[in-house]
Length: 100
Image 1 (cartoon, rainbow, N blue to C red):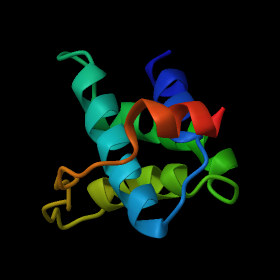
Image 2 (cartoon, helix red, strand yellow):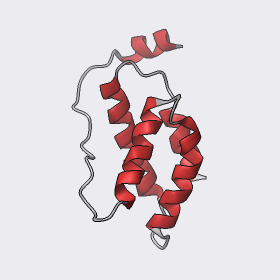
Image 3 (cartoon, one colour):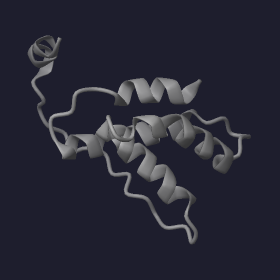
């Protein structure tokens, strides 16, 4: 299931609300890229939201992901904010080891 992998990647310890925004947007882009070409976006978005909604309160990046799905289903359609994070150093291997 595509949404399960995306949710697993979004359920991490997040230092700042800005980082949650970045991860939520990247998760949405990843999920969107994995959708089969012949599938109905609306049906897939509703399924993804229903699976992810249980984690909105506990995982900030999942909340951002769900908000993007809700925005994408609203009428009239408006462009979503899907900008990628600005490149910056985040601590590299040492920081990843410290997180474990």
